[in-house]
Amino acid sequence: MGQIKLTNVKKSFGAVDVLHGIDLDIRGGELVVFVGPSGCGKSTLLRAIAGLEKITSGEIAIDGKPVNDVTAADRGLAMVFQSYALYPHMSVRQNLAFGLENSKMPKAEIKERITEAARMLEIEPYLERRPGQLSGGQRQRVAIGRAIVRRPVAFLLDEPLSNLDAELRVSTRAELAALHARLASTMIYVTHDQVEAMTLADRIVVLRAGRIEQVGSPLDLYNTPANRFVAGFIGAPHMNFLQATIASVTPESIVVTLPGDHRLEIPSKGSGLVQGAKVTLGVRPQHIGLGSGTTGANQSIPARIRLVEALGSETVIHADLAGEKMLVVVAGQHRLTPGADIDLSLSAAPIHLFDEKGLRIEHAV
Ligand SMILES: Nc1ncnc2c1ncn2[C@@H]1O[C@H](COP(=O)(O)OP(=O)(O)OP(=O)(O)O)[C@@H](O)[C@H]1O
Ligand SMILES: [Mg+2]
Picture 1 (cartoon, rainbow, N blue to C red):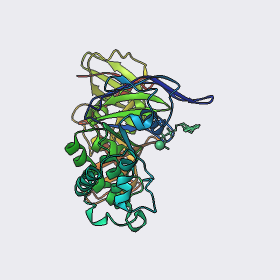
Picture 2 (spheres, helix red, strand yellow):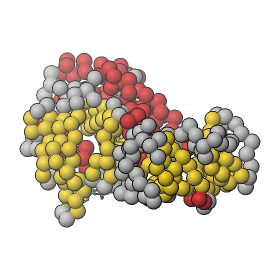
Picture 3 (cartoon, rainbow, N blue to C red):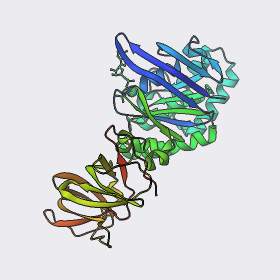
Picture 4 (cartoon, rainbow, N blue to C red):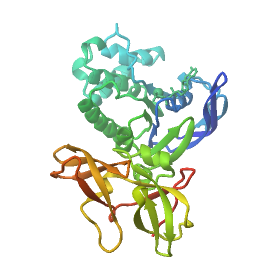
């Protein structure tokens, strides 16, 4: 139950093409997160699945049945919006009951479903209040409750936490994860916040300008991003990118020339790279160390400190490498002075290489 399959789904608004052929197979019970920058088509895709937006071509199937011509109300899905969309003049209980009453469900069953959802979401004390008498987090739980009482085959959530403050977002996110575990129903969750995507998802779908860039588990995307866009989007702060040229290739390693003519040797096998090729080197801020890592190989590059952010548990260093910005995040507290020179050690860092089209180059050792 709750399997959703998209085949070559396209959507245009007049002359504007918004979705360019989306193929996606969502398993029953899976929590899939659509993530991507503003305007990439996340909401449009979700609304198309919900049946609120008619697709231009392609097919959407739920549990094996095409639903292109099935109305939103008959798709068995429940949508939760960022704006909550609660009825302000109704009590919480009436908000929860409204959709069920419209479908002529027996009163006793409605009562039972509301009691269960209210207990699950811990909103029992507020059932007789109106939405205006609730906090943002409580309202959001009511909006989720209204979806739960319908017992949908899948939940579709569009940025449901973005109106909450930072602390409440983190706790509500954890509640949602627990709720998903308990309900075991399919959830599609839209966000532009990659931390939310990483923490919630079984699989993340990264969208960009109406196309899927990559689909995978959070750690797949983090460890082996398909391209530079995904590499830069997943992980915070985002990956450092440096223009580099392949200086030499041996069966065991590649030597790249970085800005400032610094050379870096990377263990590598079978990359297919040749001397002189232009690549982009990617390295995450957390994977760079401090101090000279010059253990024979040239694994350390000199840089200048521009700014230091001491966060207590970690230190964020904004460095300058021959005019290129490098962000470094190291654990613990360090006495560092802006303007001073440091050595950035890449000896332990996973190094990503991207070709001129931005695609990741396999260079496994
Ligand atoms: N009804 C519409 N008519 C014309 N263009 C639309 C319509 N709805 C959305 N669009 C366009 O489709 C593109 C995708 O919009 P969508 O709302 O799906 O983006 P999104 O990824 O959800 O962005 P955000 O993160 O800002 O919510 C945008 O360029 C938007 O302007
Ligand atoms: Mg949106």
